[in-house]
Length: 303
Image 1: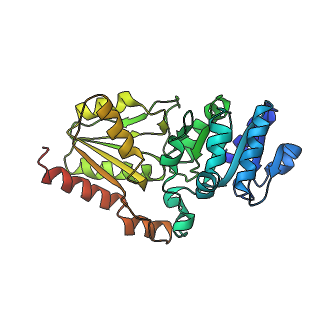
Image 2 (image 1 turned 120 degrees about the vertical axis):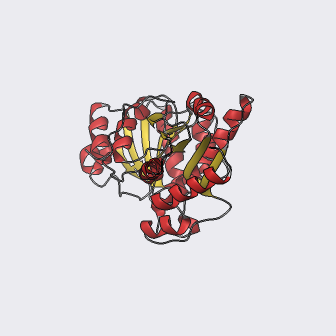
Image 3 (image 1 turned 135 degrees about the horizontal axis):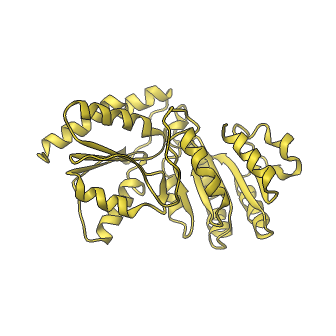
């Protein structure tokens, strides 16, 4: 099953669901035939789509809306904040090609601020699945919730079998006393490989999939700040406002600190290219991340 098949299956079982797009049908090409009038394409009008979705939600519908992530979260931000956020309506925002998934696009089409923007809206939930399997595991609960939600759609296949999803809970892949890697989204697969490389070098390394960034699993963040000598946050997002910021906020709120390393984009957009080229150019291949983590760990004498 893929995203579209799950969406159609869910919508056919629940006639409250309305599928909408701002002329971005990559994820929903077969939905019009399946849902008929419950599929609405507003054209390249993200703000209009969000406003219409809010109106439908006020009338008991559950709109699942689709657009390119940068235009959904930035161009339509005021409408999301005001029409959906303030009223706390159950509109589900599916952001397509977020982060490094927008590999061939320049800065105007890169969505590397979306987590920061969306989590700043009171009541808005933020989800960042690691791969297609994780996405499909998470969506039924997200769509069934009464809360507004932003989903960083990630339909990349990894072959990893994820555990059952629970709102606000991280997925613990493994535990380690030297280093714990905290990651979400596309970079999960390379983080998993980086963990294996570090373990081959004799380090005890844990890995946590922070699949839900809001509400975040604060207990997990606090726990691993205490049980590991170093925490590493990995994200295809700007340093400001993403997982590193969430970790810092959580620790400060609890009067705690931790030895940390953040692998993120610091005050810059990424150079466009094929995905493999982007990962290599920005230092996010498994080998590059393992080397950076190991070097930081040893140079700071955490051992």
